Amino acid sequence: MAKLLTGYILALSAATAIGGLASAQATAPAPASQPSTAAFSSPETDSLLKDLFAQPAPPAAAKQIDALLAACGKDAAKVRSVIKGDAAYKDFSPGWQTLTAKVKDGSAEVDTEYYVRIPQGYAPGKSWPVFLIASGKNGMTEQQEKGALGVLGRDAAEKYICIAATLPDPEGYKATPYHEQACLAPLEWVRLNLNAADDRVYVAGYGVPGHSAWHLATMYPHLFAAALPMQSVPWHEGSPVVCLSYLENLCCLSVWAAWGEKSAGKDSTADLNRQIAARLKQFNNTLFKGSEVPGKEHHGCQPPSGEIAEFFAAAKRNSIPSAFTHLFHLPHHARGYYLEAVKFIRQPTDFAKLAQVKIPVDPKHMPTGEEARELVRKEYDKYLFRISAELDWPANKLAIKADDVKTIRLYVMDGMFDLSKPVTITFAGKTWTGKIAPSGRCMLTNYASARDASAVVVNELDIDSAGQVAIRFKD
Image (cartoon, rainbow, N blue to C red; front, side, top):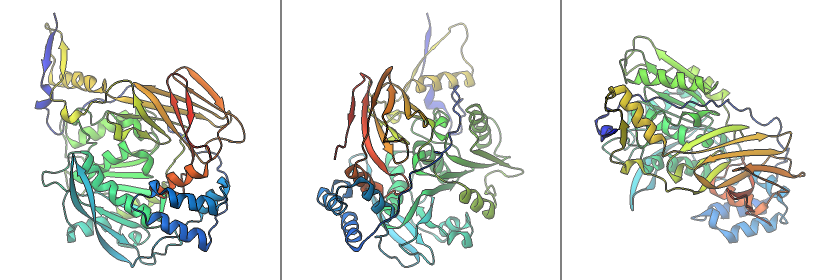
């Protein structure tokens, strides 16, 4: 009779290396072509856009959205043009802005400061790339300011809106939801208030902030064009056990990881990053670049600023990948590019509340430490949800697969399908074919949430495992 190995997770160190996944996922190219939409703006639409984004919750501002729809004659094509021509942003003086965000820690709200640097020459009529650097400290210091600008170099930094996030927790980074929000809330403020180039948002961090950069890139890859985690490892709820379990999420994102050769030894930062490189190679990921810095341990692993600037400049977000896989275990990570799991077959498991796992063990062979870690990892992986998509542009078809997900929401992106023709979608062995009409209300509602003009959502579909499809917007 098999014995049970319990509570092993409590003894794992912070640098434990766990193996990855076995399936392969090729990197997907961007669409061959996008519809050409001329930008349009007028004093009336500019005024209405300013009014919309002055509301405390723009996506729920039905009166302002109705007014914009009326100004566009309820014409979806004109709504597209107004979104593309949006320059109704406030003007800001160059330099650092000190701001405060409220992030939720359970039922409590925590105030956290963050800092946004407006570049010289900023003007609302031009979109600017965004550089987000995470932090392990609370409050701006001269060292943090130099770090935020030193990654790119001061000259190159003048081409970016820079965000320096701070961490509202003296105990350090733990990948909790409110630690995520400490970075995502500043990014949201920038996207809503400054003319950000949403397809050119980059995230970086060194050491503890690098753990955050890994986490954000892995759990929210649809937000970023590239990531630069340095001397760090992917860290999520449930780590160290699950720190390599979500690497398939990076299939369509440019990632450059740098680490020191001398941070070596089993389960070290160097060892983990070597495992990451090997796993991503198994997934046929061609967008990952790993740099092991000879002779360095923790300090001195940052690549040259000029090379970083070139890496960022060459990377652009792919908002409509032809194929991707997204793994997660909690609902707030359920969005992967244009798919989101909205109903589940089983209850999601919070790894932060999973005190121990039970592992069946052969009584004739007690596992070694490495074997036990692998057994624990496999147990945790059972709690993961998986969604994936394969998009066939010539055939106007989308194939969706999911593990333990009952209902999928499809965000139909501008340029994703030829909407003059029927679209075919398969999910859970069922096939649906039908026409999808662009919705001006859907475009404005989604635009109001992120002000993302480079990834316009023209409609939404809820698709369940029983074969039912609901088109959410019918203007």
